[in-house]
Image (tube, rainbow, N blue to C red; front, side, top):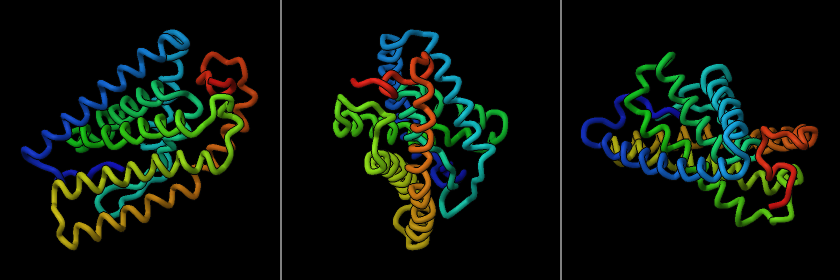
Length: 222
């Protein structure tokens, strides 16, 4: 989902610094909550797991350029359900940064846009999960319909932000809108796979009960 270099330039790119700062501020809140919940060691280990996972998603798993951006299997809802919001946020930020610093320096000027595009949908699925998943339901007991909602929210949020950045940079020209649409159709196809991945991961995670390195909601009611 990287925003291609050259789409947003000049003063317009400054806006992405503001959105990234806002996302970082909310991430700090999540981190503080995570520290209170299970302590530093658990949060740190889950953040490392998330960071490695995100790096694999971006750099090793199949990805391809489509329209205004690239299609990646980010599996944001999987990270959230297994590890929790704070570790997922840290992992998305650090995994993307590591990829940029060591493998794709050309993407670093777009880091603010890319991290906003990844984190804000994560915050959205956290909010939806708190409102739609009963407090008596552990994440390992979620249904396909519930994980589909989370996955659709995350991937839809990614597409919406990519569209926003592309329009900010190139306006409403027919070619730009067509490129956005092409990307959106390709990216939303991830929804066909992610809920199934979530269910498989959640089924396997039932064997991790008692582990300090998963989110407490994975096995326990709120």
